[in-house]
Image (tube, rainbow, N blue to C red; front, side):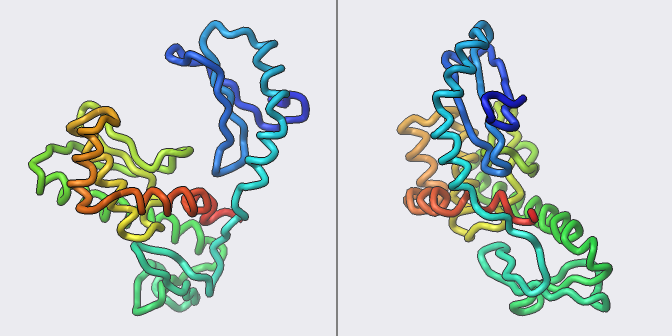
Length: 227
């Protein structure tokens, strides 16, 4: 929907919503308006129009696209690797010293690299989640990865934990702080003082430093692999 010159406006009504809320997707710049079920659409559109300046400022702050190109620095599991493509390299990506090698046709290099990184993220996050949870005798069910709009992780009441695969692009301590955060939710499904004490205990340090890194750099990770 286009409203008053605002492209890509998505309108969502939620039963639990108590007020109107505007967000700008950090991956695309799309605008999302959440409304209570019975909120009138006309006043809501006037409210969106009144926030045109805020929407524009949020879009201007979005990072530049971060395409995958040979020779670039690729952040992976706490290190930067030089992406070394050659048609004669093995097709499967491999870490060799300070290089991340990949072969095969160049026109599908990016898609194959992203699939590999997602699979590696799943393996790393599954292992870290079970190690942190196991050390504290906390039970975890399934660990999975996706590419959510904004959340880095989520924990459901049935014990399943789901992460953004883009955690593999973060420094190790930032990724582990998010793992500790979600594992702590297996005990406290809130953000109470008890939750934050357990989060810090599981992480083994004050997580505020990791949260500061996310505020400064997290949005850019949504643009990795995008032209």
